[in-house]
Image 1 (cartoon, rainbow over the protein chains, first blue to last red):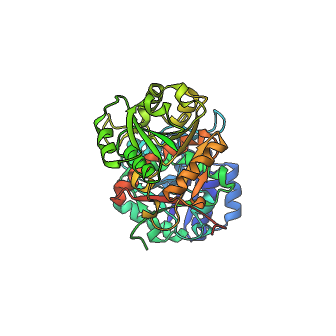
Image 2: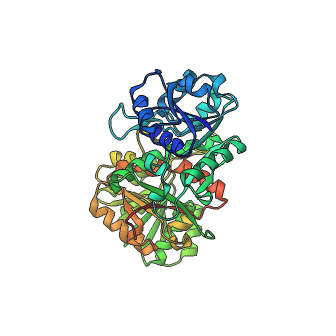
Image 3: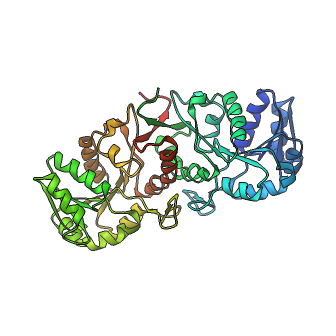
Length: 220
Length: 220
């Protein structure tokens, strides 16, 4: 599949690399066509990897990963162009972390809204799916690095779009039973507001490669 | 131990009942001395159970459970009286849920602050310990109702106070290994901001008797 990965940070590069390994044609998008992180990534990833502007990446893609920061995601997708997103599945991996006031980071949006909801409102013809934002990038593409059962949340207004994304998550290594569909995109609020707890857990455990498992009676 | 349970809702009554079963002398506190919920609870709980105002309950107590709503917790503890809380362990079980704008509830405080931090600032001589707010009241006092390993978070500035509370949690049925100390009271932000995800999980699973387990490599 032709996939755009918007964002050249660690999350974007990790996901883009995994997608290339899985045989997809991936264009990494950034504000400029010659972004240095993206150039290094293309050189390392080899065949199937390309780079361009946000619009370059989105225009040729069948599916888009938003791996930009949550605080700039709306702007990045505006640069990608609403027409280039229309009808497409947009996987929103972002978290609205604001490090500008020191540690711990606060959220640029929460409580009554979320990045996932902002994107769906701003781009009503895109099919926003929120997932992967509750785990470290190493766990995103290698869920078996965390042993046993653990849970990945997914939300979005479009059932078919979520099914498509669940297929990709399956290729990343997430078993079907680990993926918990929380319903429509308003669930993104809960997925994003989990981040302060996640950050505290990372500090307490001294490691980012952990996850949570939802546990109740009657499971297998 | 002489324990005050502030709040006469389901959480307060569930915790107070468990504490009486464990042999503690429990006074349930409310705004008025003759609260009807508290009177019913006293009649049902039998020996070791009493009721009174917030101040009545706190003044005679060695340890205090705050089971009032997070949005009114500061006011409730002011009514209890700073002098009646000074030096005492105050277990803050509250969540700042605001149902006044419809469903899902929002939080009255989050992102840059939390109820746990508000209480510690307002009552600097009290030893605030945040815990239990991430599970339904049935799970609070019967953790084995959720099978397998699952995690309870605790935070607070006073290590001795946390140890005291861990003893009570142990008597409630929480194994030592299930209790994860997140550090000082600023962790309450993460514990409380988990609630929107918890509420969404309750809706998705169709049940409140679940919990999350923190999972990583190297655990037993």
